[in-house]
Length: 202
Image (cartoon, rainbow, N blue to C red; front, side, top):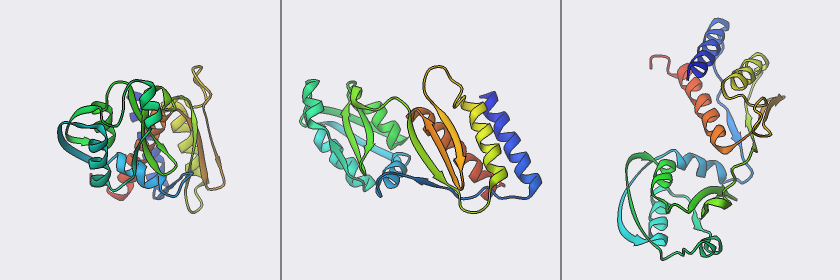
């Protein structure tokens, strides 16, 4: 946490001194609908489902968040579950991501797959590094250097011995190879910095 605060402080101080605004960035995804699904995972998600079939709970969440949520029935069958397995689902004041983490049966997990949110066996969910790209319009060469350094120092991207991770920038693209959990932290960092510039009174 101290490292994160230090990186934020350094980046904010440098940018304010140079008079630059933190640019609006766009995450580049493989499927046109992926960005909508990722955004929905961070939306407020409240529900009270007392002992309904899993398929009904999933359909309810799909309608509430306006995204396709699909059940991987083959993977469920392999771990002794199916679409009619009963679930009790309660969530208040949490994101859809937290909602799923807390309420899905223990053997299940979720992942963004080809424009959908797939509910599948936990061992099917990719835990290793994957590559995500972020596009920053305009000329932000100095910002890229500071941003890459901040992510390297804060999350040890490219330096950890527990996996194959890396970060680089090419033109207007920031290219990050990380685990899904660390990707979420990096995106939270980007949003925190962006919100500071656009809403400094906060």
